[in-house]
Length: 232
Image (cartoon, rainbow, N blue to C red; front, side, top):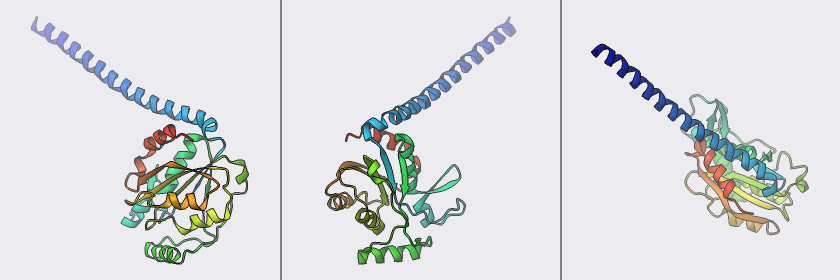
């Protein structure tokens, strides 16, 4: 009798544990499905909410090799599925994927060095001189877009000077400009006001998205929420 009771008790315990395990898996699956549904809904609403959108960004990862990064290289980039992406590049691609936008990367005609010290020296000199480095290429069909998501890193409390080159060379009058940036602790600084001054005939949305370089690789859900909450 004791043996029979023990067998019955064991079967009961296994059944309960299996049920708990299934409930946990169902909860996790439900959570993931909810995130996917929110993402799909956002993409479906993208055209209605933002019109035809273009994500324009500048990003400067200091390496393309995911292994054995220096501290400076880690600060400038994230590794996603084994691939190195610049911090701002990753956020830009997330926005593109969520709203079904097109994307354009701002690049200088003369490539910036990836060596950290050389890049710092060049970038600080450009900022001191208020330089306008030449662009490698322009957006060919800017007239087609209603909304421009514009992204950049914060370099010493300002945009990289190549952003000013883009704003000087590109007519954004009448467009909605939505800003996003990555930073080491300074947020947007005064860059929103700078862009409003540069693009006085555009509508610069105040509710931009700013993320620390230490949190970029986990920013996807926050970007989705920001996009969902945006009103323009």
